[in-house]
Length: 240
Image (cartoon, rainbow, N blue to C red; front, side):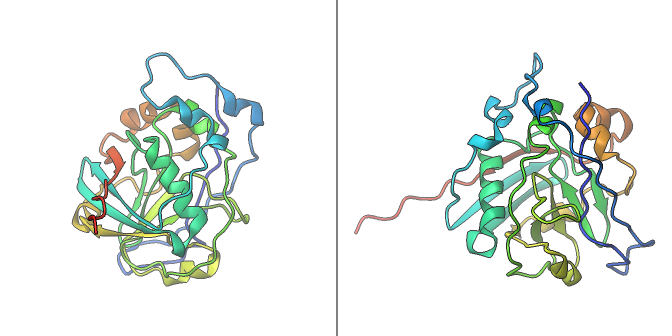
């Protein structure tokens, strides 16, 4: 079953950093797919959490603050989330990580000097399930500075789903377009800087949605991938 995957962008882009060679324009968002396609059964041999096929049930409230450790082919980094910055975004990220949504996914759009985008599942069935599982916008409390993590979105309000980006530079101009950071990389930003950016805009988001990791492995083998993204356990409070 083919998935008409909605393409997301991270700004009305002109040159956002001195290292960006050409202007970037946001891709158009294709029409939404029929809701029934999101209920496609998991293919045999997959290893994702079956709960990911039911986004409407993944509504846990995130802690006030929490950390997520990413292990990637470029190295490890940690994201510290502050729920007060963007509660809807923090809750969505928390639920995705709890159910290992990002494991096996690629950093498919890496623009040196601007940002690294990820959040399309390695599994087409999972991408289908989350196609229309959007969250409401959050007010922009923090600015899109280097290392801050933000959900991608279309030009329409309340269109955030699973795609995110990490800012390479100080992209304050994104603040005016509803891009609300919910966390920041507190350790391992050097690994983020190493993410492969040689393919630019070439990977097609629709094909990633339709074919999953197989499309990227075949056509863009140098892309860095997420081996695991997990919540960091917090030590219990000391007894008084």
